[in-house]
Length: 261
Image (cartoon, rainbow, N blue to C red):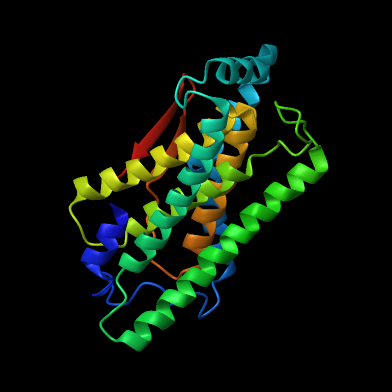
């Protein structure tokens, strides 16, 4: 659907501020304040901390290994371990195709030369973020040396497939926010992108390649990296979609959660 979207919108037009997507990427260099705010927003986004918290909770009473054993034995979604492994690769490829299509569909103006230049700048930022995410994942794999459920090697934690899938889903979601379209259609595309990412991660669990916690931490890394690099280095106006406010008084405490879409 996103490939059709890219063809339909053709990446023409401009953003609401009159600029084009990618035009202000890295130039001028972002201020320290913008980098700090972007990092804070990405770290406190529920799609970063919630998967990480879920991975921690799965360590209680060996829940991580229990879910893994059940998924490998029953394969409720993909039918077999081999089919799950193949599906994970196809789903990851589809996720990256969605991210690329959404990049093409962002407003890039009508001048062909500028269009290619701005898209290239944006892709450089997205590529740098992906390299950062995979670098963090590889460091975790080489440092922690967790054995995979199928005992193939000791590079289970975190899941590289989950890192890539959630990075791609977040890039897609962020890019869609820059495209002029009906809100319901945008939300549908965004939900579909994240559903694909979740399916990729679960396929790795059913395939016996990762424990659920490996996938959840990979999801947190991928989402954080994509959100941070997008907001810090693309030079776009960004509005925080999720927000929290902690209220304290002498008698009680409250947590306010707000979602804007």
